[in-house]
Length: 84
Image (spheres, rainbow, N blue to C red):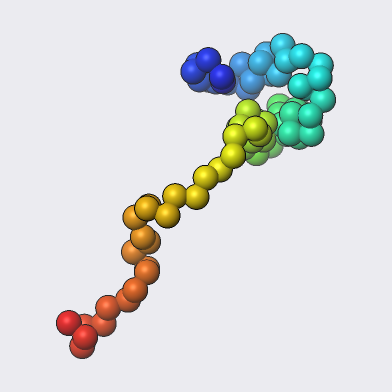
């Protein structure tokens, strides 16, 4: 959530979505989150998809940044025993 609180249950997620303004709830990200939440509740489907949809809807205006200073992956350059 935007105020730093954590969602603990599907009920909390549903309550948060129902309190959204109509213009914001009409966004495609929120519509996707709502449909996955309903499928999770009604048909006992995995809640992970509902969580992913909810997080994408919450962070839809945030731009992901590329950080070139990040640590390289361990599979970057392979060293063989003969080259040591």
